[in-house]
Every structure is written in C-alpha cells, then in structure tokens.
Image 1 (tube, helix red, strand yellow):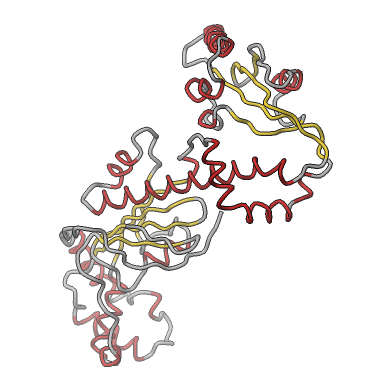
Image 2 (cartoon, helix red, strand yellow):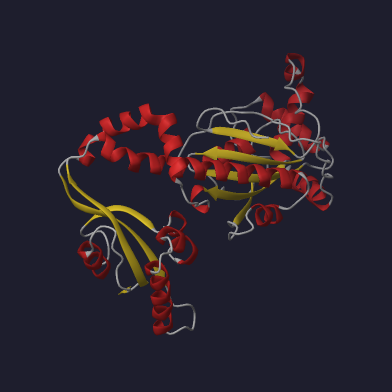
Length: 376
C-alpha cells in the first residue's frame, strides 16, 4: 500500500517476492572479476518501460457544503495566510458575478434546433422546481463545470463569450436565463451573487475553502486510483487492463513505451533516474511516482544478457578499460567495436527467452520512499 511522505513521494511495489539485493561489500567492490561482471551487466542489460500518467483532472467530482466546511475547519490558518499573502487580488475589484450554467450541445448528426429543444426542456425542469446544481450535474455537457453543479465561480466582464456575458450580467440574483446560444452550444444560466470593491477574509474564505476542498478530493481520488492500478499490475494484469478496471467510467489515459538503453529517452529525468536504479527490486516491477498534480505509473521489465557472465573477449576488453578509465571511448561509451557484437548476441538471447515473471506476494511490498523533484 502507498505510504506517501510529505507532498511528493516515490513508491515501488515489486512484482517479485523477496527484498532487493544488498549492495556489494567492500571485498566484492575490490574484486577485479566482480568489477568486470558489474560493468558487463551495466552495458548489456536493457529495461523496457511502459508508462502512463494519472492527472488530477481525471477525477472531477462535486464538492458539497460539508466538504467545504470540513476543509475550512482543518485549514483555516493556511487559508488566512493565503488571503493575507494575496490580499491585492481582492482589493478594488471591478463588478463580478457568481454564476452557474448548463450547456447543451448538438450531438453528432443532430441539427442545432434539436439541441435547443432539449435545452428548453431542461430549463422547464428548473422553473418547475428542480435543483439547478443537480440538473447541471446530470445534464450539462460542459466537462469543466458539470461535476460542480455548473458552478463557474466569480468572473468579471470580458471573461466569457459576448452572448453569455450579456445574458448573465443582465440577470438579477437567483434568476434563471432564457436559453442562450453561443458557439459552444445552448446555455441556461443562473446568477448566484455579486461582488465588487475590497473584500474581507470572511467574504473570500468560502471561495478559497471550496477550491482547496475540490483539489484535496481530486488528489485523494487520484492516489486511490494509482494504488488500484499498482495492485492490479502486481497481481498479473497488463497496464491497459489495470487502467480500464480502475477507471471504468472514464477514458483511460494513454500509455507510452521506451527502452532505457539504446533509444532517446522520452520521459522526465526523474523517471529515468529511478528506472536506472542499479539494484532493482526484481525482474519486473511496477512503480507509482507522485509528483505535483499527477501520478506516473511505470511498469519496468529487465532483460539480462544470456549468458550472465561476459564472454572471454568481452571480459578481456572490460578489464583493459577498467584499468585505464580515462582512455578514449571509456566506460560510458559502451563496448568497443570488437566486443559490441558479442554483447548484442547475449542480449538477443535474453530477449528470445526473457526471465519468468515472479509470482507477487500476498501484499504489495514498499520498496522505498524518496523525494523526487516536482514539476508542473
């Protein structure tokens, strides 16, 4: 199970059983044959990586008044500090309105008039007494606001498209608009309130607490989904199967593949650093890297050379290079031209018969917890 430390954490659940191999002892490090073997494995091993990203944006859900109240009770000091540090944002405000909307769009092949009729029907339900937020959550086709009951927050003039803005600013508080056409579709708008001038903390804190509660709930849902994906992959599912099962009501994110060696590396540097770990936890493992507002899920498969010990010609070459580490074409450059075919043949043998996947343990084992750099 995931046990994040602080705001950013790295977790690795091994698909294999026992603990990672211990680091080499001083005696082993001093052994020339051990050094040759380690250099050979470092140059001949390949790691195939499959990756996907789970973003907070995938996990949109409604925030209730109880969620907001609970968040404010727990984080009031932080919210007050945020207000004090950004007081200018709520000073001398031009007139703003707080609005909700419901967007109805024409589906593929549907004439616009049919969408307008559906919008008129939705508006009639609201006028007959149905809750605007509940109807918005069920009917609106705006992915950015539907889960929030159509809530658009406060906005000034110049933020929305002209037709929408004109209709919204003309409404009285609590009033529901006629159906408003725009290039996005057909809108039903309700104005919740207005503000302008300089605002106090008590006037601003509901907005801050609502935003904080929404982000917190999204993050919790994202991390729970990442845990689910990791457990399913560790139990034998493919990454695609795990994503489809963990996110049944959403379009799963895409996956990417790369090899750690031999091709340009397409992933962020922190991912490369951890995939390149010298003593990995097994032959195949799954990792979840939490960074800022996303979780990166990796499935890594090692391909070791076969045989695992260097052929004589390769061993002789490596001994010479290790004895003269500053010579031209040093360690990082890979095997010399004469040895490269031997290394390639060993690796091709491993690809033809990759190591068997170890059965997962009864519970996911935490491999390590370490900080990684955050990045937006």
